[in-house]
Amino acid sequence: MAAEEQKSAGPAKLVIRNIGLILSGALERPILDGDAVVAVDGRISAIGRLKDLDTESATTVVDAKGAVLTPGLIDSHVHPVAGDWTPRQTQLNWIDSSMHGGVTTMISAGEVHTPGRPRDIVGLKAMAITAQRTFAAFRPGGVKLHAGAPVIEHGMEESDFAELASAGVKLLGEIGLGGVKDGPTGRKMVEWARKHGIQSTIHTGGPSIPGSGLIDKDIVLECDADVVGHINGGHTALPDDQIRCICESCKRGLELVHNGNGRSALYTLQLAKEMGDLERVILGTDGPAGSGAQPLGILRMISMLASLGDVPAETAFCFATGNTARMRALDCGLIEIGRTADFVLMDKAQHSPAKDMLESVALGDLPGVGMVIIDGSVRAGRSRNTPPAERMPKVVLA
Image (cartoon, rainbow, N blue to C red):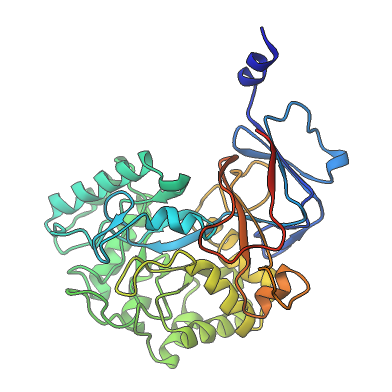
């Protein structure tokens, strides 16, 4: 057998070397000691110093050139429709474009912008199962989109949730975007969903689309969904006293989104800090929506929270990676052995006044994305959307 054939017959082995800084995604230890990472067949197998790692038989070698390695970013709140197209803005390739903003995983909060979205129980179940199946099989830019999030309606029974779960549906769309807008019905359905392994999110704040309505603190607390969706409003936020009440009265996820109220996001972050509950904070864009698609929305949220929210930049990155992965039970989002090898290599933007990337983010700048890796495979080099990074990684063996 030729050497080339032996190489192709073995495991796919990725080595990333000359890493300037490794951000783990974990709040308890956001920065790791090391300058190299190894992944085999799409999963992290080693982290540390290059001289101490087994790098033999690598099939792909990336020279990070001193750039920062982070876990792939996770957008906890998107509204997909069909493929990489959104009718809300008549826009193509928004998912692939988000990958160029460092996003490698997305979570659907409901396919609510689908033209003619069915609201009868048979139809909404069929649409959810179809969305789950299609996005499991179609990954624009390599992005993993967890879709199939039905919006609950009156008349659903526990058997409907059992049927959805058995078909592979693991999410509920935002409670409040359909006919169910009251606490007692919402809580009953959340409990059915939880019983069958389906995670729930509730709309929070004023109405966002025709048919939705105000979801205030009383409804949020009574429904007790797993994630308080866009607690900073999507778009209109609740009053501060209601946000405080939600934060203090439950221990569910606190989702901050780009398409919400920035001041309310910072207020929620401050409350989470006061309570010692930063692990509850996760990030989304809530796009595509009336504000459009936001390819750099997650990076912008990280930068805003780090520069105005009085948290270290490395902590802000955890909100968009490890926090979300743990809350959503995902196998990505953290740089640790056994996790999926989803990475972003980035650095401070050229001509930033900061001394390094973390300081540039703390000053409010966006970093430059130099490479995106998903499942151990390089999916993009220099981002077409971020400013150019000062240090650009390079594939030296492929």
